Length: 166
Image 1 (cartoon, rainbow, N blue to C red):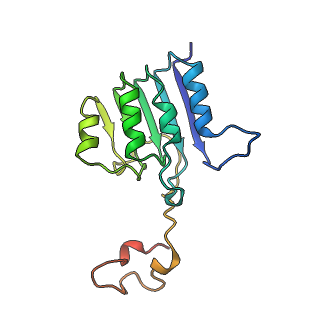
Image 2 (cartoon, rainbow, N blue to C red):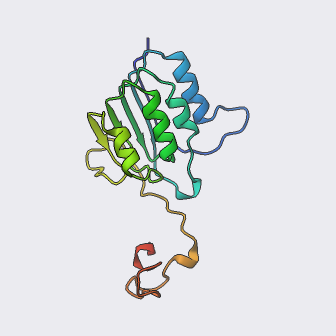
């Protein structure tokens, strides 16, 4: 009978075999809650080092009656997003802010055209209602400037000041 479920601020740490993974939790929710209409799966921050992870998206794609989905800081990529959009046929609202593995291209735009509300990875988080951390970029040290951000070793900007973090 459950219509709304929120799993937020999960650390994203891989669990041991004695615990369920987040993908397994999504699978259990998909199976146990066929009337689920609203699902929020929000992580504290996006981790670049985690790579693309579509396992949770694969399970969310089984939630056929879902109308609202918020995935904040998730590691899904375009394949996972496509799985969700094709599986969740009643989806009206999708929020993938801080899901930086999603590349907004023509195919993604076409898949999302039917949605009434769409929040993209780089959209403003001013109205986001949970606390969150800055995206953990995981950039190797040899790409980081160690001095002033204006002391760019490459005048083309690569790696340049964009890579500078304090």
